[in-house]
Amino acid sequence: MNFLHYEVNLGPGDAVRVTLKGNAANVLLLDDSNFNSYQSGTQYRYYGGYYTRSPAIIRPPNPGHWHVVVNLGGNVGSVNAVVQVFHAG
Image (cartoon, rainbow, N blue to C red; front, side, top):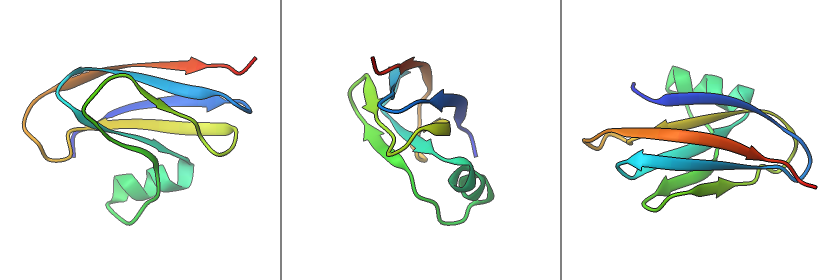
């Protein structure tokens, strides 16, 4: 399974902005438990989805440690990503 992986720490009201370079891709925001499930190929829950336009802006339901995963969902192509955290304030 090929995917890009980034880790971010988010505070209350923070958002993640993911700028895609290349093909459209899945951009998933997962907590630790769901990231472990994603890696093991079992059922998981995420925030985000399949983005054909960039940037993807995702706000988590609560602050904490999060994983950003970018993958092509089985499609052919290549993708790179720039991940930025926007702090509430």
